[in-house]
Each structure stands twice: as C-alpha cells, then as structure tokens.
Length: 453
Figure 1 (cartoon, rainbow, N blue to C red):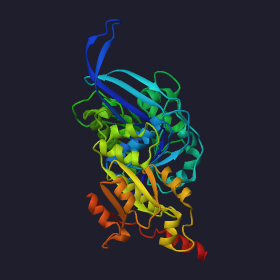
Figure 2 (figure 1 turned 90 degrees about the horizontal axis):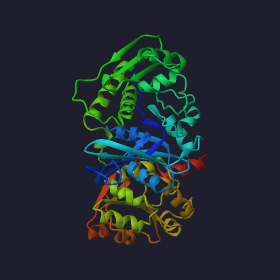
Figure 3 (figure 1 turned 90 degrees about the vertical axis):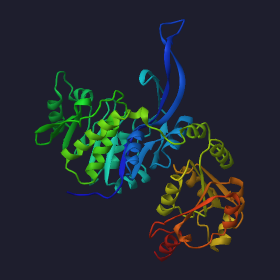
Figure 4 (figure 1 turned 120 degrees about the horizontal axis):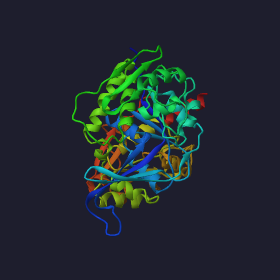
C-alpha cells in the first residue's frame, strides 16, 4: 500500500453557486407561479471549487488549479476560497459562471445560470509545479475548458489520477486510477442506449484505458469495474435519505481521491467515497454548507478595494482582520505558506510591504532585489491576499495604527523576541500570532545560492 504525502491537487472549472432561500405560500396574481418571499441568500464555490473546498474541510492539504475571472463574481469566488486552500489561478475568457437556485422550504423551484466564462487552456509554471508536488490529482471537469489543458499538466505524473467527467467536457487521459461518471454520464459516454451501469463501467475501462471506473448510482451507491473486466456493486451505508443531491458527485470524487492518496485500494477508496457522499446528502447537501464571511465575500467582490476599504468592510461586518508585514523580496514558498496560514486566521488579509527605501535601510545595499511595484503586483496576485499596503517608515507602526487589525502575524524567526511594533499592537489591542517558518526557505539563502552559483 503506497502512501503519497503530497497535497490533493484539484484541476477544474470553478463556478459561483448561490442559493436564495425563502417561503412560497402563495401564487402570483398575474401568473400561476409561486411567489418566494426571500429570507436568505447564501454563496459558496461550485464545480471544482466545491470539490476542493469539501476536501479541505476534511483537513486535507488541497491545491486548486482553476480559471478565475476578474469580475465581481470571480472576486467573490476567490474570497470564498481564500483561507481554506491554495488557489493557482488560470486565465478566464469571459464572465464567471454563476448558478442561482431559488428554493422554498428546502425544495429547488428553478435554477438560473449566467456567465459565459471559459478557461484559456494553457499550462502555467505555477500549475505545473503544483501538479509535480501532488500526492494525488482530481480532475473535476465541468465543461468550461480547464480540463482541456490537463493533458499537458498530467504528462508523466506518477501519482493516482481521479477524473470526474462532464457531458460537455473532454475525454479523460489514459491510465487514470479511477474515472467517476454518474449513471447518465456513463450512458452518454458509451454512446448507445439501454446499457446497464455494470456493463457501462466495464466498457468504459476499456475505451478510456482506465485502471477502474466507478459509475455512481445515487441512493444505490456505485458500481465499480476494474481493467480486468470484473465488477462489483458498492452499496451505501444505511442512512436516512436526503433529497438535495447537489454536490454529491464532487464529495464522492474528492473523498475517493483522498483515500487513494492515503494508499487505500481502489475498492476501499470507492467505498469511502460512497459513504462520504451519502452522509453529505443526508446532512443537507451543498445547501447546508455554511461559510464564515460569505456576505463579506460578496461585498469584497463588488470591485477591487483599497487596504483601508478592506479594513472598514471587515470591521463593519463583524469580521476578523488579519495583517502581516515585511519586505517580501524574492517571494518564495516560505512566504506563500506564511500568507496562506495567516489568511486562514480570519476573514481578510492585508499585507504591509516595506517600500524600496525602507527595505534598503533595513536590509542594506543591494536590497531589495525586486522593486516595490513588482513586489506589490506579485503579492496582489496571490489568492490568499486581499490587499497590499506600502509603508515608507522603518517599522509598520503607522500602518498598524491606521488599519487596526485584530491579528498581526509574524514569521517564526521572531519567536521569543519582542517585536519592534509591539507598542503599537498593544495600543490598538491587537493579538500577535507567530507562525513557524518553512525550514530551508529564506530570501537571504536564495540570494546567497545565486551568488555562489
């Protein structure tokens, strides 16, 4: 049993899902349709974003490779994902897809889809690095183009690949450890009518050259076929049945992929997936997901915000504002790890960056290697960063007192030492959190290695 220690890397199309909940106790006077008195609007990631989020909420280390638009819906989606997992963004052409369900007393009445976004299908260096470090890969295809670039990303990958297909998507790459179509998707992929799920699973292992295919059957579990031709039914656990199955396929695919990463045989991994999907539906499905700060995410997505606007939005909504500071010269994996963990502590992260003059006084001649404009742009591109603020002083005291964060984060190299900004933090009543640094990752070390080479 082989265990792959890297993260689950999810590759696929992310959507913005919105549930509008209310009561429908009367008909409209001008048409025989129900009138929904809206009580609540909830936002969450959909598509590959939901699959990644659900896996991350299990405590797994998850990296999501997805296309994100620079529009209000795209910024909301990014804000909803922030703090839960690492996002490697790809370009999106068009507007972010939004799927809105109108629901009354738990029953979906209608779904409205907007947005025409499609991924620009090209591999990026960041995406390639993410896949090379994966413990397992889940391709969550929602027919919007990200999976079309997966062949280049997955070339030569030596870890299990789980492929969750879509009717408008692309054909899975050969050699997948597991392909997970629903029954209707399997029938369509087989290309002929009246094929039962068991026969479809066996046929697809041959045509897709997959190690295994699991056709999901809703309340009946799944049927699993191996490349050798034999198959078996995987029944669900005995649970009280739910009726909202939205997101069940994402839950199944993600849980199965994590089980394969942890070294389970494919039959056991599929059994884990069936069990987790069943419990997900029983607990209310995607509609029951509650994300902290989703209203704040909606506000943050309206347009790009200045650092002070972000700070005011977080405070006025009762959220928790996180801030950190530094030069962030030659941004590396240690910086990214620190920023991701910092963002997970609250609802928004503002990074305070030393100006070029400040960094030179602090670090000496020859620094910074990267100018402040480029450092700011790179930091702004990170999904875990909500705003960047440059300061000219030798310490961040002034920006701390302007922003008034609830939490100030420092790297582990400050452990046990009094911070220069300690007095300012005490004045505003901010909590200080010191996060451990990633061993072997430092800007000084990078510069020394380049000079030696």
